[in-house]
Every structure is written in C-alpha cells, then in structure tokens.
Length: 415
Image 1 (cartoon, helix red, strand yellow):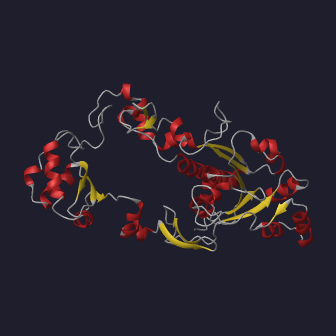
Image 2: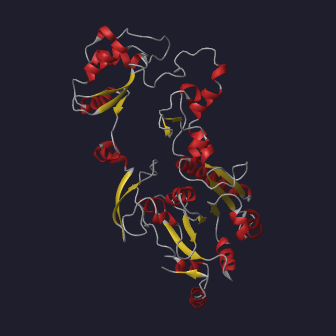
C-alpha cells in the first residue's frame, strides 16, 4: 500500500465485485475508503465464491482489504442525517449499483451535489448509467458477453458452449476481465477528477462501464476488427479463420524439463542473434515475411526444428539466455500455483503472503506498480460488517452518547 492518496476520503456504497474492486484500488493507493453497508448482511461477497471461514470468501478478503466498514440503515429514521454528516467529509463517492438505485435512496449524484458541490461521484456498473441496458444488474461474464469477447456455438446435444474464439474481431480477439479492467479505468478517472478539482474546485460525475472496459482494454483487437474491411495491406496480420500462434518465431515451445517458453524472436536482430547462439546460422535467413517483423508464419518445418532446439535444454537455460543476451523469450507458466516459484514475480511482490485475524493465512494479489520502491503490505484486513462504525462516527464528531443512541435505535450497527 502507498500513500499517494493519503488524505482522500472515499465513501463506497457497493456490493459484489465492480464497486468493491474500484474501492480496492483507491484504498491500495492510500485513500481512506469507508464502506457503507446495510446492517446484518452487508456486502454478501463475503458469503459467495467459496469460504475460508464463515463470511470470509477469498474475493472479500482481497477486494475489501484496507477499507473500513460502517453499518448504516439509510431507510431508518435518522439514517440519512448520518449519511450527510459522513458525506461532508468525503472527496469521492463510489456507487456500485445499477440504474438509479441511489436516487431512490435519496443519495444520488444530484442530491449529493446539493450538499457538497465538489463531490466526485463515480458510478461503476456492468453496463453503465446511460443506454438501454443501464438498468440491468450484471454478473461476471455478462460484461464480456455484451462486449463480444466470448465466442459461442451450439453443440450437437443442443447445449450452447463457449468455444475457442478464432474469427472474432477480424481474427484478433478482444476480452479480459471486465470487472478488473473497468475498475482500473474508473480509478484513473477518479484520480484525474481529483486533480481537476484541485485546480478548479469542480466536482465530477463519472459513469464507468465494465462492458465498455472490455472493449477498451482489448482495443487492438477491436480497432483491427472494426476496420478490417479498410485495411489494404494485410502483411503481418492473422486472417479471420486462422488459428493463433501459427508463426514459428512467435510460438510456444516445450523445454527439456516439460516446462514451456514463449519464443518471440520476430525482429531480425533477435532472430539472427538466437541462431548464432544456438549455432544454427543455417536458419538465420529463414523468413516468410519481409519487413521489420517476421513471424515465420506457417513455416511448419522451422517450427519442428525450433521445437527440437528448445527441447534440448530446460526452461531455465532459455530464460537465463534471454536475460543475458536480451532476447524476447519468456516463461509460459502453467497454473497459478507455479507463480510462487518464479523469482521475478517474487521480487516484484505482486503475490503477497499475509494473514487475516479471523480467516488466518491468506495470499493477496498486490499492486502492479511499485511506488517509491516500497513493498506491498496491506495494513488493514477486510472488515466485518460495521467493524469501524463507532470509530468512523467518532471521527466526524459524534459523541459516545449519540453513537449509543444510534446503535440502540438500529440506525447503525456494530459486529
């Protein structure tokens, strides 16, 4: 965790992965993210997608770390008063609900602007706030499906199945995890809005869509697919209907120890150097495409020869060669468990071993950007519902007696 957003307070009103993931990114950057939850159930991400201990799913432990939780019933008498007292201390509000759910509660963007004109309000949902699909609640693959990132076919048994996508987007697929991609794009806009507010005093309404993010994240496939009919020279492009990785010089190969590498010596300087290093100068002039890049496309004999070369040494031999000689050859790990053994991943600290006070030992996924050489070390474990209710209310000036009254009247709650 870094302190890049230290001093920024975020109120998060969200359940499940979209809004939770956005809040996670801001919390990891140092923002004080206060998760407003309904008393009792709260964010039921705790209860789905597997359990380590009751109410502690791996997803909850990951995306709700570094946050604080206040259990607040907005529909109870006095609930909105507490919300507005909290909102006055906030810089950012995350709305993770589809359509106008927060408007119906009385805490939508227009209402929040009346109380705090410079609030940065980010609604992050599957399909976004506007457009005909906006009211639809989304789960998981719905965003990828709407973005044409999943290829389907009906089998002989009459059931629809996901198939390998070979022709989508002019032969180049788009896709990815819409939830994660959208959260990153939304977090970037939140930070940009904070910068603008510092300059102009102006707040913002940010409408983030996970489905849109799938298309944006896969912009290469999208751009080439949408403009495929306009391209006059297709040299170097995989054609619709062709299988991926047909090139001998851009290909997966199995090493002598059964592990894999991805070989990408497609520039002539890299290819020539590799041939020299493996003492196969006879292959140096082997090309199928002119120009600055040669994939060795459909050269099956060259592919066989490269498999024999790569298969003569263990994976580590080729990785050490790539490091020493600066060649584009990298490991192709199989299964997430194998990542623990990769020394590069270990040094980057993207996988972090930690512990939760209730769930016990837990392996976190850290940040992909190292800030000021600091290690990733989440200081606050994912909270139980209302874990910091009293703490947060005291910070905004509530006396203990008032907090006790709110608790007794069930306006707010503690674990």
